Structure formats: C-alpha cells, structure tokens
Length: 170
Image (cartoon, rainbow, N blue to C red; front, side):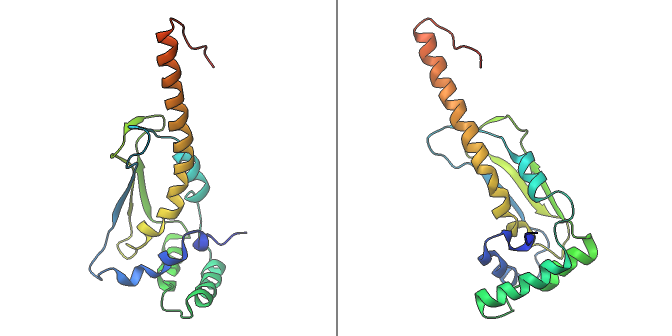
C-alpha cells in the first residue's frame, strides 16, 4: 500500500510552520489561467475525489513512515507536521477534514474563473488545504483532454457549416 502522506510534493511538508499561528482556515481555488482556449471544459474531478479524497486516507503507519522519509529528505524532523497528521488520525479517523466544491462536471467555463475551491474544516489544520493541491491538480489531465476535444469539435462544426455539411454524431 502506498503512503498517502507522501503523495504530495515534499516541499509542501515544509509549509505548515510558515503560516501565522492565528490562521485557522485557508481557502484556495484552482482556475485555468489561459492558453490556447478561452474556455475550459470541467471534467474529471469526481474521479480525482474518489481516488484521492474519499474515505480513510491516513493511517498510523503512514505517519511513522513519512516522518522517517522527511528526515531522510531534509535531514531534520522539524519540517514534518507529525502532530497535524496525528490529529487527522486521532480526531478525524484518518479522513481529511476538507471541504471541496466545484463547478458541475461538463460545464464549459470561461478561463480565469474558479473551477474548484478547497478549505480546511478543522481550524487546527489550515496547512492541509494547500497540501492537498498536488492531488487536486490531477484534474488537469482530464480537463485538458476534455477542453481539447471540445475545441476540435467546435472547429469541425465551423468548417462543416461552411461547407454546408453537418458533423456525424459520434
């Protein structure tokens, strides 16, 4: 079994002590900032949530293993938030106290709009919001494929109409 705690970028393990101690909640969002398309087709989040966020994700052995792995990477135990991960196991039964909201799948959304928002629901764990970013970014592949397919379809429709034809249904 893979260690869930180590699924995020290692440097994210070092962020928690940088937050001011008075911060209780961190609210973050993901957006498409632009590129070849003016629109984004929202697709794939349900798969990412099921794979990476649904159910019990953190177990005691993972904390012990991650603590040793971070010691090996950084040469110190000060960067690994052992107490925070322990709280997830002890208080939340290994489930992540996060609230994730999103635009409905299949929505065609102009770029520069929030697609997904995430906030911690335990005021003792504000760092968890941005730790989860790496896993939430797994949505970019299905979004990119859906957006590219949508744009190819729009180009096909444009030229089909110009030639007096209709696209065949798939």
